[in-house]
Length: 321
Image (cartoon, rainbow, N blue to C red; front, side):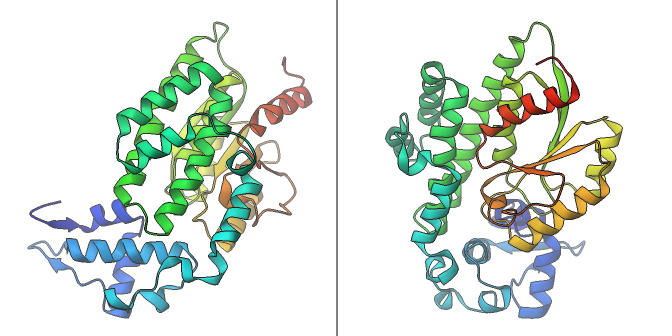
């Protein structure tokens, strides 16, 4: 950011809208309308950035670019109007993915949500650390972190919280979970055991929190992990799996993932990976598209399912459990 203007790379990072997409919209729809510096680099003012945030919410709610990008600020409809994303449908999906959200008490959930809404990341970190101390890491992942992820996503979709709330939430949770992983790893005196799991997301998927939650469960199981970060091209995933001698490739899809993109990415990756390399897929965005997954693909409905699958893999491979 410079003097109230945002470079195209900053806009991509802040909104999750790719640079190529921004250029296409500029040519096709006449928006956004960046200024150029002496080197021809694109810069966007704050008003355009806010409009892009609103457009991204609408796209995540199911609208098509041609329906919303050309509209002025006053013409942008509320995201919740999209019939494919009515609140009751989203609530039902959340319940199917995270039963704890509706059907179990969430430890410290009210206090944690208040900390999110009032932008108190330090308070949120304290609550999460205390919950882990009392309930254990696995329980907090399933009964606190996962439901809060859904709640934050829903509130952002409805425009009830800002992007900064989501970012503060994500950073706070990531900090606490990384601390927990380090503590778990330090307790494995005998070292890590197979399977060696490569964790990443498919191209365009920028949400890393699901990966971190899966890494927590893999750490508890004493697994070796190879972390690639987010939005990795499929061929790079295949090459990295070979180079690292991974036994498993694990992907995570957020609720914002589009059905066809999920199916295509998983199908292509399964075809390109050696048969010996297992493909595990999780996250709220994977559940409906992969209700009938391709052969050789294991879909996790809940992050805590990872433990059972690790045990099953070890048993099948003859590794010590």
